[in-house]
Image (cartoon, rainbow over all chains, first blue to last red; front, side):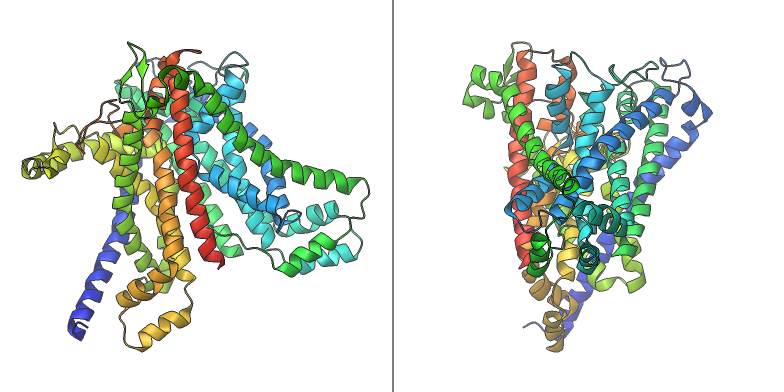
Length: 277
Length: 325
């Protein structure tokens, strides 16, 4: 064995390097945020929220993209949350310990990390090709498929934290199972389940790839869910890669809006989750 | 969040033994629960089936050699997945090679070095790296990182390492900034929080007694980490790395911005390349319904799904087996 002095030096060096690595990752995060702030803030103004996208030089904003994103995310949550909630409940209550539940949990874990662009391709094949075109519905469907696994995972985790005695007490009073689940277990895990939905919302809000082939994007004002629909990530993608300075500036403004929203949701839900566990 | 808390056998028996008293409402409710569980299975099945079916004509046209053929020529309509499969695997492997030592270091920092009150805030901050949307990494990479790499990283490397035989082949070509290496670096930063979070979770599950015994015989923190904690969690940690790899394989927007999007094979780390995901994102707008190109893109998607599925499934099996046992 090496001498004590040498072992101590090794320990010291490794600790210094590890601390350096942690500092490096924080610096990189700060760098990304700084880039967004320094380029996004100057481009941010009332026009971003009041005007719709326009040709370069015409002084457009991102209103239609923001509204389109909100609508598609809203529909995705309305569709995805109940399915995710029910599936998570199935895993934690009825399915617990069964082979079916194990398979469902496994598949859900895979879907949770599956490439989101493939979800877009899938919805393209399922909804865009047969129904004759890109649409807000297709975009919402793709986002809903991203929402479901997140909600399933957090719902199951949160329901598992609910003491079994609470359920027993309700059953002992003669409550049917649907009442026990909805009035007792869901209620007890309410805060955690809502946190999961917020995390799913944060995930859906930043996704670009699944919208490329589903809602496509739209440079005009349109609330028609059966037609191509604008969204913030797609507008950013389109504008960031363009050669026009005012478009690139708008892309940074949009990027700042999305990131601030997504990170705020994440920090809040993580704080809430940490409190519960 | 990797492992869910599963109930004891007794809990399971209690729930199973309960006879529902709601005669009409309960069967409906339980039916809905089961249906949504089955729905998730059907969803996965449908995704696999539709990607495969959509890409089948391309497979028929080009045969099984589609998988490794390096031709991608929209003009002559000859397509092959070789370049993209290589690009996907290469960029993801670079990402893991870069992210792994960083994750080991950060996990060591978060579990052993950082003073108590700082652990959680620093941990949360690093987790935020996972929350930043992919397209933001793309823009940051494209506007900030690519020019820096082109100006300060590539020229010296090409000059110093380029002339070395064999190894030099990795450092050839003009310093464009965008390319395989840049994509790998950005991906590394993106998967870092996933790997680190699971490392920390595994390390925190090491029984304190084991570590204390090692400290008791005079081991230093690093020695305990290396010889006790890491070996204890090895299986799950391999699973964590696989999760990072699986995430890197399918990452789209960030890669599309920084990889250069060239459908040519090159050994150089600096050469522009393409991944399956970036090719789909890039070429899809130019592919019309029913065209051979679209079918080839769908076939590419199917290949990516199969690769990610295998990696993610392995990851999960490794992580679960360890955390449960």
